[in-house]
Every structure is written in structure tokens, then in C-alpha cells.
Length: 628
Ligand SMILES: Cc1ncc(C[n+]2csc(CCOP(=O)(O)OP(=O)(O)O)c2C)c(N)n1
Image 1 (cartoon, rainbow, N blue to C red):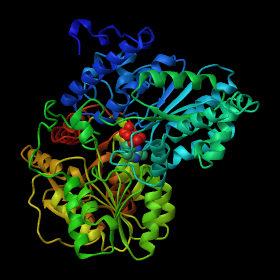
Image 2 (cartoon, rainbow, N blue to C red):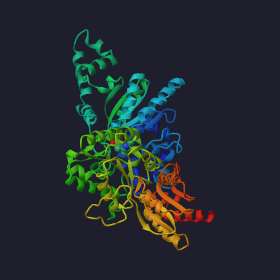
Image 3 (cartoon, rainbow, N blue to C red):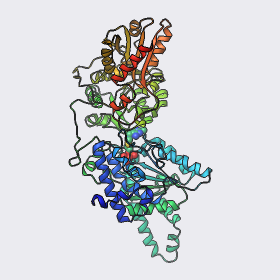
Image 4 (cartoon, rainbow, N blue to C red):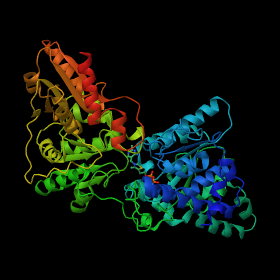
């Protein structure tokens, strides 16, 4: 890279500056942006491999299209760093994912160039269809571009959108960023089909061959070639009748070398001229430009801070994460029970199921970014006598609410749901917060809803959940455990039974990840004259009504503590139960999370800001007692 003084990046204030550059300068800019992304992500953590893979696509899009008049929508949004850097946020990018700082995903409030907030996959094509339909109704003239990965395309919503796009035929330019990867290697028939499209490079070759043969055929040859699109259509139909996008009514172009700025600019310009939906298949390399990320795109998908020279993570504590305890426990159980099957929706490593997939490849299913399908798939397996454990992050299981209700709970089918990343999630912003699951699960019929206080209890819960004969969800945070030794022998936790951790005058009932903070707070407050018993609820449903009723004092105080949205959450469950008893005149304090305000930052930072760290608990309880 050139010296600091000669950096092209320093001259880029907005997308208009990209358009003045020559191809050579653009290519230098790509190199500079890569170095900048690597430097920043090595400090802040972030989605490194996807962003390194999308540098040229982002530059070419901003070169050809006029953002924000033209609408560029990023699927998932985890690949938008170059877009952010060249749309006026170059300096703020130093603090991406930090507080104070900017988001790692597109956020409308942050820039007029972020026209659609994302974080969850497979939404871009539907949104693009909305923008394009609105454009037609309003008789406006601008382009609509959606950038989606081959992973994002495995999500059913993408196909629901393609169904409408091909039918309605509004002009939409779909850039399919193909890199063979979701977070892990992309799986499934669609992935195979795309790799078939790519690997052949056959279409262009066959087209050229047919053209050169036709040129030598007197009279009919040239007229046929001059048919242009009709000629291309004929070739595609004759030689590649299965070209699925074309069959759906969407013009297909590709494969294009996704790191060749010249080629990308050319095809994007061409797509602009075509008056209908187009899909351009761009082949990119995840981690492009940084060898450790190329060699291990999965680890660098959402990387923790690392040493740039070696690629090694900066800190690796000894305490295992909840995800890894979950993964180890499922392996342990599966060794003894061959009915156990593990399912993930495109997160084999994130959910801790990597080891399971290695040891039991035939009992492990990565279904792609398809949470709804994952739930129904588990339902069928369970009805056939298997014991599916479906591991889906809390925020992504929101997608499958109806499947949980209709295909699991109404039929009372025993499937275990492991909800990782439940509660406050660091760095990724509002879209990734796992704050709603207590609420969206606790009113489902037959669903057992539980959360362990620590990693040791987690393993007992997984073991127990498999015995309950009902659907059962276990939520746990994106965090390391507390360093609690893991019992060798797994224990059955009686269904709906809580445990007392401390005795006291009034009652504090804590759920899951908040139990130890609640205990700490109670110990601090005890010294100040506020005496609270502490209960580890274990279950939000069924509640341990007997124990709660035992411990509640008429005219006493009940405090509930949870790492989830308060409205309709665990505290509400306790309150409803006590109200139904009708015999207590209680002071009731519900501590939990708000509906909307989620600052960026680390878990501790966010907990502090939302007053759910130990200090915050003490303050709120003190204030409450002060007002009584
Ligand atoms: C509904 C949903 N499920 C899972 C995820 C987690 N996730 C984030 S990015 C990603 C892979 C996306 O792959 P692709 O679209 O091909 O983009 P690439 O990273 O390969 O560029 C997954 C599974 C998500 N964001 N949303």
C-alpha cells in the first residue's frame, strides 16, 4: 500500500468521489480498504471474511449506481463495511461495533445511504420488491439493487420474493454474491446447483462456441446472432433448460469474477439497461486479501479481536462458553442414545455443534438459513421416534413462531430447542438481541421454558429436557460460563421445580443468566437492611407455584429479575400467577429489559446502561424500597 499521504482512501468523502477514479485507482482503493478493514476488525472484532469478499462488489455498485437515489439493499448487512467507509463514515469506521461508534450493520438512522436496516438474513429481495413496486406506483425513476449471498438465498423468504419478482417483472438488479459459504460451507441442493452454474463457466463458453459456428453458416448465421437477447434465450433454453432463475422470469447473467472491478462495472452497467429483473451471479472469495481469513473463513466470519500477523485471537480464556458446554453435552448424550439428532440453521460452529457434526455426521443436519423449516423438520423427526435437539439463536427463532405453535406445541411434540445468544448480545446491535424468547415462548401451549443459572446447570437441563416428553426450550447467553466445575454425572431436574439460594424476608426470583447478579445484589442489600430471599426459578413455564407461594409474604415485596423484555416476560408470569391467587397485597418490582433502546457495546456496558448489572439491580431495588 502507498504511504499515508498518497492514499486514495483519504480523498473519498462520499460515493461521488468513487466515480472519478480510473480502474487502476479503484483497484488501489480496494487494497487500501482491505487493509483498513483488517486493521479495524483486528481491534474491534467483526465480520471480516464476508467484508473482505465484498469490497469490489461494493465499489463497483457505488461506481455505477447513484446512492441514495438508487436503492442498494444489503441482505443480512454483515458485508456493508466498504459501503459504510465510502459513504461518509470512513473515520467513524474506526469505532465500528463500539460505543460510542457506528453499527456493523446498515442502520437508517446512521446514514441516508443505509436505506434498509438488516441483521437477519434473506430479507433483501422482498424489500427490493417493495421499493420497486413503490417506484412504479409513484412513477419514479431510480434503480433498485439487492445484494444477497448464496447463504441468504437458502432462506425461504428469498424464494417467496423471487416468486413475486419473476411474476411482476419490476426492474430489480439482484447481485448474488456467491462464495460457497454461508457462515460454514453452504449446504443443500441449491448450493450444489449454484456451484454447478459457477464451475462450468459453461454458459459463456457455449455461447461463444455457438456464435463462432453460426458466423460461418451462410445466410442464417449472422441474423440469428443479431437476435441478441432472443439468441441468448435460445441458447440457454436449448443447452441449459434448467436455468432456474430464467425459468422464473429473471434474466440471469454470470458467472462474473466478483473481484474484477472491470467486469463488475460492465455487467452492472448492462443490467441498468435491461428493463426487467436481473440476477447477476458474482463469484467471490470469502476472506479475500487476508490469508488467515481465506484459510479459515468460518472463524473470521464474525471474528474476535486478533493479531494481524498471525491471525490468532488475542484472548482465549480457559472458561468454556455456554455454547461449547451445550455442544459437549449433546455429544455426551448422543453417545448413549442414538435417537438424538442435532439440527442447526446454518450455524454449526456458533451453536457449538461442530464436534457433534464430526462425531455423528449422519445425525447432524445443517438445513441452511431456514429456521422455520428446521422446526418442522424436527417435528417430523420427533413424530417418527427420534429426539431432535434444534439449536437456533434466540433472535433467529423469532422467524419460526408459527411453526413452534402450529407444528410443535399444538401437537405437543417433544423437541428440545436450544436458544443460544438469549439475552443481551454484544457488538451487533438491536437486530441480534435475544430478548424476546421468554415472551414468545411462554404462552405457547405445552412448551416448557427454562434457563440455567450457570454452565453446569445447562448440562443438567439439556439432559432433563430430553426426558420431559413435551416441547422444551432452554435459553442461555452468548457468554463464557462462570467457571463452575461441570458435574461428571448428568442429573434430572424435576420439571417445574425451582431452588432457593438464599433465605430472606422478602422474595427475589431470578431467571437464568440473572441469578448470580441477583444473589450478589441481595447480599449487598442485606447489609443495608433490605432482606431478600433469592430463588433460582429455572423454569419460566411451568413456574414452581408451590415454592413461590410458600415464600411470598402477604403485604410483602416480590422482585423478579430476567434478561429479557419485561412486557409479557418472566416477571409477568409470576405476577399473573400471584394475582390469580388473589390473597396477597404485594409490592411488585419487575426488573428486565426495555423494548427498544439497545446501545452498541459489550455485554457489561449494555447491562450497565440498561441498569441490569448488579449495581443497577441494587439501585433499582433500593429506590423501590425507598418509595414504598
Ligand atoms: C435469519 C438468520 N439466520 C441466521 C443468521 C446468521 N448469519 C449471518 S450471516 C450468515 C451467512 C450468510 O451467508 P451469505 O449470505 O452467503 O453471505 P457471506 O457471509 O457468505 O458473504 C448467517 C447464517 C442471520 N443473520 N439471520
